[in-house]
Image (cartoon, rainbow, N blue to C red; front, side, top):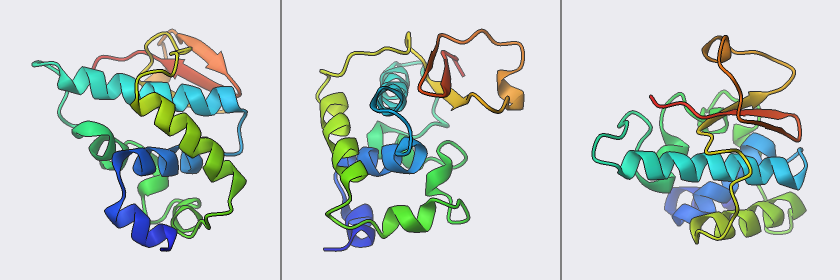
Length: 146
């Protein structure tokens, strides 16, 4: 089964793994784990009765919510390669292991409860004036209640 078919019918762990690949596969393992933690932190926040709804619901919904994780946007440079990944992709294998740990609740959160992140080499408008929780592997992590 191709990665594109898997992406459409995938489990939440597979969607999380693809998101980790699309967002951070070229970064150190700790940074990939940080992205996974930020996604799981969003899952927890959304599950609260007064949690934000625009992030989606559940792991798959949060990963694929509009304007949240760029790799799922069809025009993002990593979107097509992400959907065309082969089973032998080593970075995807790492992302799958991290995704499984995150989804099962055994991945430690090194981000301080972060829900957002950006590459250290850029400063998006939403991050201006905010204090980061952590910087890991070239990613800067923030805990935002939205």
